Length: 313
Image 1: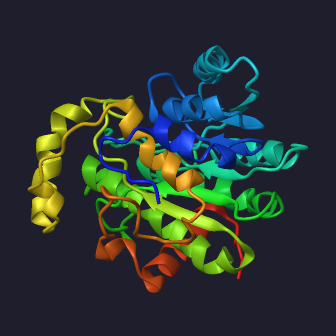
Image 2 (image 1 turned 90 degrees about the horizontal axis):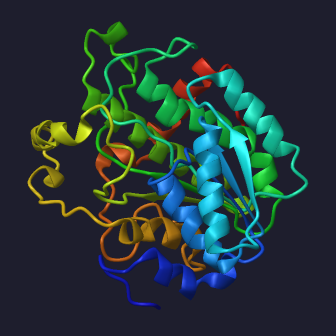
Image 3 (image 1 turned 90 degrees about the vertical axis):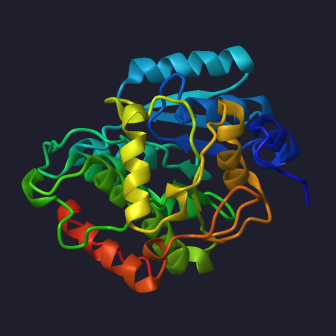
């Protein structure tokens, strides 16, 4: 096994597992310059994937990333996919487009996320963080699942983060009356984890690998709306719920080290359906992010707003 540490860069991991990149199709959500959604496809470009699908709300920004990928590997093939996770009609249109591709999809990295934003609702009527970070991914991934499963052995879905539990009875924060930006972010990202856990349980026997990860603190585009200035409140909230991260000093990682865990989760051949084990810097899962009951409740909670049931069992 290759030795890894906090100082391991994604470029090293991609070099070690280059055969897991070559001739495969990757789809990454929320692609924009100077973000994890850019760092990951730029890094794997060196190993010549068959195709990288760059899904984004802003296609112009995604095109900038496509250009940077071409600069890294002139033979690299990219495709831009318009995807507005905060608008279910757009999510369905994007899924239809992906399902029409002649190529399969081997790896989906659900990277999109907004963090600690002011309260607002989407066109579909849901709290913005909940829909953009979670419901949109839930719907999109499930709609393209049949294509994933037909695309070759061990297709992968990568999800991430685990700050706080899903608000099963108040996911809309009482129309904003009980809203806290960090609780909203935490709940949405934990729901992503529970989605991956459900996928692993329901579809692991059919070869699907569903992976959860926590990349750590990275300077990137997620930190909008003054979120970096609010980290003191985040630590205070973590301390209130007894999370050891509330007392742990987090050293920001550079982009190469920060996206290394994405590369490992997406590429390592031995990494099969483990929901809480990645090399060295990944912690065990918090209790609200594991458990079949919590995952099932969150799945059922999610089917109502997207108005579709997904019976993969």
